[in-house]
Image (cartoon, rainbow, N blue to C red; front, side, top):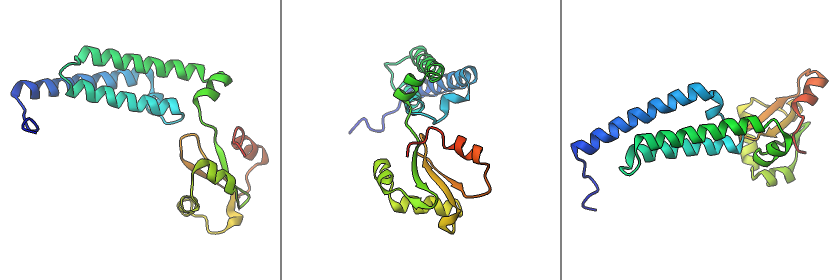
Amino acid sequence: MEHLLDLTLSSAIRIVLSCLGIYIAVIALTRIFGKRSFSKMSSFDFAMTVAVGSLIATTVLSSTVSLAEGAVGLLAVYSFQLAAAFFRRYKPFRQAIDNTPLLLMRNGEILHDNLRIARVTEGDLRAKLREANVSHYSEIQAVVFETTGDITVLHNTHMDKNLKEWLLTDVAE
């Protein structure tokens, strides 16, 4: 406990310089590898975000990890993300790393078994319906628990049948 608030000038300078260096590295790598680096479209994307945060924190605060080592770690994580984005084009790989969207409501009917599978409560569902300005069950075409954990409400409008079918492609019932 006696070292809880210890800070020397040299360690403060090291932290600031490491922070600046790793910050520049993250910006540069994100520009090179693209915005997908921080999307939340799959579980792999989530792991990428967590790994980058951990690498930044470790590089900035640990005196045993150099800025160069942190930058190499970031490059490796970004490279894995790029490879995963490439291989997601292939169904077996995509099925291995992506969650499947799940239908929670269809034509105003709550699918209770799917709520249980998704671990979504009726209260969560009601909140999302309020957020989507739903005032009557007849307004609901579908409610989808997305791969990202978001809940999407498709309103029962004069939606083109082909568009509706396309939007619900790959959604588990």
